Image (cartoon, rainbow, N blue to C red; front, side, top):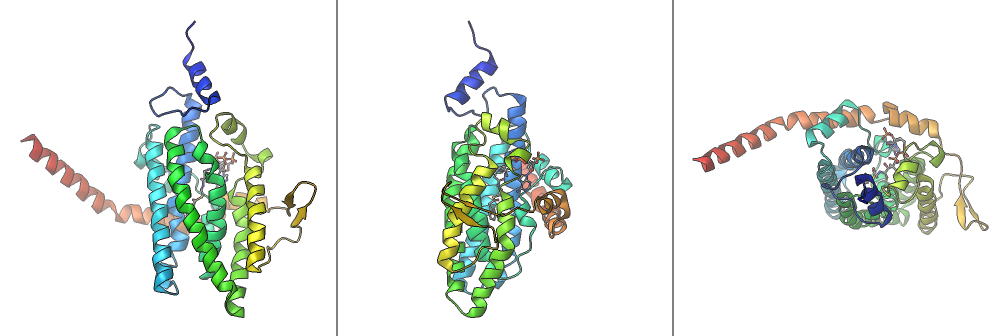
Length: 311
Ligand code: FAQ
């Protein structure tokens, strides 16, 4: 008896084999991958803006070089991810259009402002730290191009995380004022970093199906707990206090218990009402519009070359 396409697909998933772009896949599998991969790509690109804000004001040449490299890496991640997403049959123009019109989301975390240099430390430490926790399982995701992109992205994220932690370390070993700056940055970035990993499992619309398809390998709550367990000892080393009075190691579970996350704030930011949502989208739209002449010139050049070859 011949197997149906659906059975072949399901069997591949069960065997932990990769699904490749030309393989048959259920339409919903394709759609949810386009949704997650494109939103991931948009997050990388919009995520350049908060740190880009500090490149010209980095406190030394060495810091500037490192930050510049990090922000460029994020552009690279965005481009791999857009390419991976294109293999599912959506064009890059369509993805940009979805970002600019507000149809596609990008990570809530990038709608918070970067007020001091210590924010560069906190973002690398916490935001890239949370990103690694989220992305390491994605190296094993079922869609081949996404999984392969994640391998390199994770290597780079780990440099970003160290870069951020080192900034925090330097500030914490500095003057009283520098240490206060570091604490203030932790206070402002802690809760948004926990929110970044998505709503709780019982509020998460996609987790159940995405776990079945092995798109997600861990749930939002599992990742959040892992992030907290990993990060609390790092804050201790810095001598900083995590802004959560309910945070406490639980001997029975072997994990940290933590306080209530303000989900109202999360959904407000996701719906576009965060501190920087308007600024971020308008920066991306302006970049797109101001880059039009470059795209036009590239197309005109390509056409001219093609004509020459045809002769
Ligand atoms: N922000 O059912 P779920 C980085 C939406 S790392 C905004 O749980 P899912 C590196 C969600 O889309 C940041 N929206 O969804 C970097 C859905 O709405 P939809 C990016 C959020 O997909 C560092 C609804 O809520 N990383 O950029 C957020 O199963 C420093 C229900 O949620 C990734 O994208 C949020 N935080 O799980 C760059 C990783 N959370 O789509 C620069 C890949 C949820 O139906 C500087 N993505 N929503 O309209 C994932 O792992 C997943 O998509 C989750 C969400 C875990 C983010």
